[in-house]
Image (cartoon, rainbow, N blue to C red):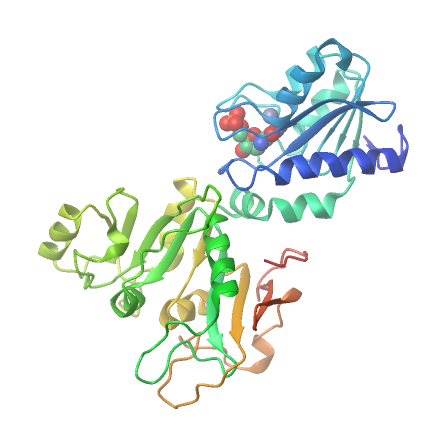
Amino acid sequence: MSRVGDGGSEAADRWAMGVALELARSCDYATSPNPMVGAVVVRDGEILGRGRTAPAGGPHAEVTALREAGDAARGATLVVSLEPCCHQGRTPPCTEAVVAAGISRCVAAMLDPNPRVSGGGLVSLRRAGIEVAVGVEAEAARLLNEQYLRWVTAGLPFVTAKFASSLDGRIATAAGESRWITGDAARHLGHLLRHRHDAVLVGVGTVLADDPELSTRLAGSVARQPLRVVVDSRLSLPPVARVIGADGRCVIATTSEAPAPARRVLEAAGARVITFAPDADGRVPLREVLRLLAEEERISVLVEGGARVHGSVFDQELADRVVAFIAPRVLGGELAPSAVAGRGVATLAAAAPLAGVTVERAGDDIVVSGYCVRRQGGAPPAQGGV
Ligand code: AOF
Ligand code: ZN
């Protein structure tokens, strides 16, 4: 298998991959649980066909690009932001379409770590006599599909822990007032984050305090509405809570210690109640909740707090990324809750700094984001930003 630079000119490959990545980006999270992929058919610097992944069940990027190129694809180069698949999923293998179209060279940004593909796509193209290169703009491709990559390799969703705090790390006053610590621009980014995740997860305390809808509200664009997950070990959520909604897309994760009548009331109100054996602290075992969501093809979860849920997420090293919205104001107060409770780290050395940290402004607020470095394993090396 050839690397970057073999075959076509490196600059031409990078240019075409830039176009493919733009197409991939334009999927705007609509493809979940499939990765967002872009593909172009090129010859002599001319683009003959373009494609991007359709929502799950629809054609993959390569198939659309090849279709658009038609007969002109014969002898041309296919540049694609992920290795073409070689398996029958909801759709047939892309490799067959690539071979049938008469493509003579294929450039992929990265391999597809899906165990059903995992290099096999490029091997079958090569066996069919197609020249293959991999690694062009690999980092950008990886960053774009960080959610899919975590899900397909770990069997867990990509978890973003998000909170909005004051400069001194408080998420509410001592009296519990929290609306709003940050301004409009930061809250708009919060909705953008919801749009970019398959599920939003909160603790029941947050629901009892704020009665949030947990919907995505983005003016002037089609917003994705994530599944709403409430962690509630004793089922203290009232059936009138707005989070339950009328769309049947609210899940309440509870324990076998919760009273059965409360469960019936919540189910009658339209929620799906899922029971887990309590963990050693009598709480809902978050890792198992995440595993179940992953099995149901939710590739990403935005955890919005409160402090106890964030505490469990960090204590159990479940977060992949942190996005902190920080308002330049000081609340103070010993009893004012901070963003993350739980046990916390035993030593400073155990709290590794985030990797790939970005700092942005949102109105008067500051947005700090970065990737969690797990104590037993590497972090995805990437540069994000909201
Ligand atoms: C590609 N091109 O555009 C995408 C790929 O169920 P299916 O048939 O849609 O297959 C889903 C799998 O295909 C997905 O898990 C991933 O391995 C790959 N995604 N592959 O060749 C694409 N989106
Ligand atoms: Zn495919």
